[in-house]
Image 1: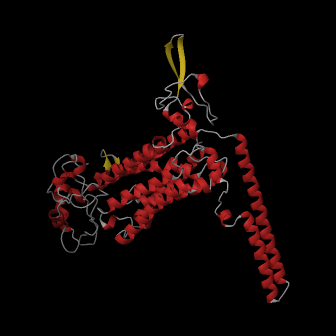
Image 2: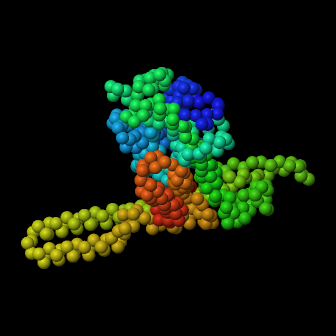
Image 3: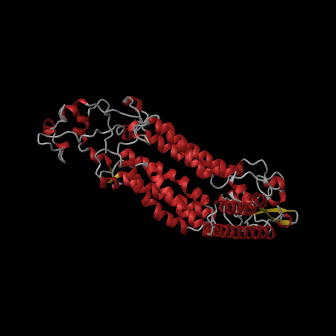
Amino acid sequence: MTLLTNIGGWSLGDWITNFGDPANERLLFGIVPAYPIFMFGGILLTIVASIIHFKMKGIPLREFEWAVVLVVPIGVIGASIFGKAFIPGMPWWRIFFFWEPGMSLFGSLFLGITAGFVLLYKRSKLTMISVWVYADCIIPNILLGQSIGRWGNFFNHEIMGTVVDYEDLNWLPDFIRNKLFYFPNLSEFKDGLGQGLPANWFSSPEIWSTYSNGEITLETFLRETSLEFRQPLFLYEAIATFSLWLIITFLIANLSRFFNKSKPWDLEPTAYPGWYNKHYKSIAEDKLTTKSTLVPIKYKQVRFTGENGEIIELKLSFWKAWNKAYYWYEPNSLAVAEFENSAEERANRRYQGEQRILQLKSQLKIKAKQTNNKLKKVEYKKSYILKRNEIYSQIGKWSRRLNVNPDARALEKLNNPNSFFVIRSGVITGSYIFGYLLIRIILEAFRNPQEYFIQNMPELNFTVLAILLLVGIGIILIAQFTAPYKWREVGWLYEKSY
């Protein structure tokens, strides 16, 4: 590990003479490779944070456990494959060496999230928990893993920006500042027999003059090549991703609790006693308005002395007030039963209609085989199309294919009778995609083209990143303004249980 000293103006030869093998820079405390330690530390932190979110929502962990077993190895291997597959001269088997430099975050996210999404989508049909609920509990916490993992890049001398003067980095502690340069690739230096550098080349300066790249000797290269210090992009990204996690987890996820035009305690003051209530900071139990909730509401007792002795009243925390008003609110069971019956009848109609269409199609094939008359065949086909379209008009064609629920808007109103503004499931996931892509696009402008998401192709690189950013915006808009009124089903868990 680089010593705490001023190395501004040093050449590569000076650095190697003083500190020896550059490979030791990758070690944590000079013992173990730092990158895998930080990488798996980030994965562990992501898992722990996700478990906390699952527990807070009361969601069983079984599906998450399966997802971890599937996603973590696929994500790690995906990062290694995408990061190394396009490196010139890379042996094919080394693209799987995830402990070596050259990991691609996008490769990890693409393969890992895809595998997890497929698994949880299939399981959601059994658990009746929206895949977006799972995603919101897991995906934002990837930011914690990214923030921790960037320190592994720091030890590998990776993820740095444009060249700056050493003095411009004085705001950083020496242990960071003195690592902000890239080591060159010395594989092109050979001896007279065409052999590469020996394992102990760094400890024998006297042999440097015997190796060359065909133009200059290794000794000349090391003595004349100055250390080029660069902006700490890894640090910028580590800070930015952690800040984004804080914003998503504590601000965006709770916007509906803090910025709601309609407040439950303003609509029904006696139902929500607390410090936020203008009329009732606490209330006697016999005056309290109760609500039907999925989970029993626990009130805090307030004791004080009155004219007739001790008085006990109840109050509710701000968080539990919103749980009582919306997140744990349970609508009338008879109304819910009507939606359940409607969903069952709709499913039966669709099934019968689809079976009737298959029957008509089979009859058309039989009739077509029984005649050689082209006019008859055309007539049979027209008759089939008319009958098929009539069935589609009854069961829906595009709404059936898109799985649209015609009762979704009424179901939403039943579960949110006061029309509270609510952050919907899926918005958190969309916020992660949008927020991280925004960070990436900003920092990408300071990277070398060789380190772009799509290497050495700036136009395509920024176009793809911009498209992914727009995908994040699209997910936010659809999740917030369309999905609740098109695809919600009774009995499922979204931002609340329907």
